[in-house]
Image (cartoon, rainbow, N blue to C red; front, top):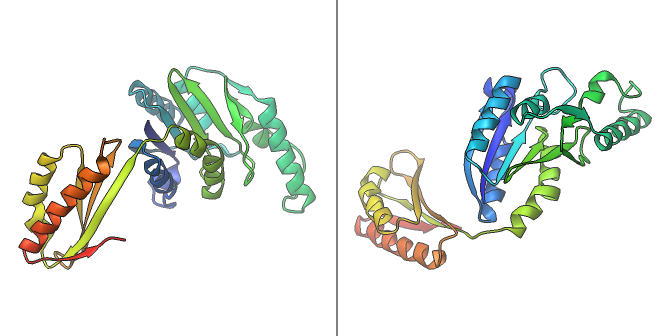
Length: 264
């Protein structure tokens, strides 16, 4: 499947908050053999959210995952932006309302919060785009949301990492596993020769094996250590092809008087 991630939040764009959510999700999406095509970060703005979502949907990915902007404050605009992008009304969802109400009631009884009951701001989180399925958030108050638009499934997840992760693990991960593809990743580290020295040889190997993605990553300085990785998605005999390409690269590195350290 093809997946796109939409990260929403002014705090990401000004560098106040580091986006670890997309990195965490990317690893798991790849693990189950699916292609993450894009990670897009945008501001908290209804028009920007709606137009960006519309542009994503034009590409017809199988899954879109948004993260951020589901809270009770004015700047949490994700649900309104998604509703506008899908041309759907925001309407109160009773299942979401009851789960939010229960979460705040429990927090009040435990002394975590001093304000009892549902306020206008708390109620705001239960207004979902028409056709939404609320997703339980056992780590927080704002529920996640699942929507379908054409052949694309949209998951709207909180920005708080602990909340995002638990909903992802409980809802998104089973879908990735059920429709899993095959992801191959192999690689090594080498020293003694620089990235630029091996670049023409890597290009030659890439042309020979066009289904593989071969990438070099300087780790320390110009030539002290370079990581080389080979990845492939859903390639028939991908393991064998990747290993064959890696063997050829090993020979090239040794021929250039480099030293190899296998990646664990």
